[in-house]
Image (tube, rainbow, N blue to C red; front, top):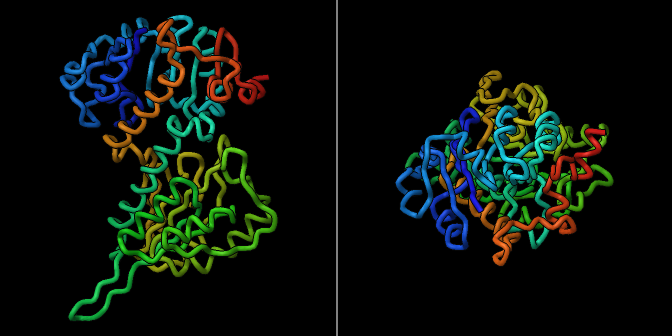
Length: 377
């Protein structure tokens, strides 16, 4: 089977779907692989590096798309490129299927089998394919590095001849994959870290990283079967805001990570909370791409609110694109390896398989994912 990897065209996207090490592994089990020229340059992978492991590097993007049985990308395709794919081709990428209704419809009409990496279930078996988690892990790291750069204070405590410098106070809201990595990175840099999550079950994980878990009584809360936080009621959101206000005011850095899968991010930090922080403080809104947790955050901008910086940069994993590409490439390779039938030399996506049922969106001319199909009914 032929795998095609086009160069990413999304503005600011530096990642690539396959790195040379993965290309070598896939070729060894029988795949042929075509890479669009320049696809890996932004992540530090030259065309020569792909050629050396057996890939065919070519400039003809349309040929790569039309000749491939499997197309691998980071970002979703442009709608006008869907018709370029061969009928019954398998397309694997982040698709944002909850919001990209027109794209999903077009992929169904074209007969493409589309796999959405956002929809890989959180299970033990699927862990090696969980691209959302691998990328969120890196995003959590990047936020802390950005905060340290923009903060007017150093993170660690220092004892100097002219006095002791107290450690910076960092408050992380949301202790999912990204939040836990942010906590761990801030602690490594020497900060004093507080954290909050609507799921009390993660309190022990927060404490195990050396941070203090902020207790806010929200009443009955929980998490989904996939481990995501459940949406709060308006009353619970107000309780959360009130409980966070004092911690935010005492913090030098606030990092918000709260996102609801397939829905707009909840607004949990208001302008008055930001105004309560000391000038020179930093707020980083990791959810800015889905609407934002912080009032006043703007995608890909730094907003100054009376001396407090609100940073709303999107596509955080792309800031460390080499490692992000390696991790995403490993996720894709694991997915292909899980369903590769060596005897028939085909990718067998069994409709009865739980991972297939969750992640395959379109197939055979129809939308086959029940959740996404309901949005189109």
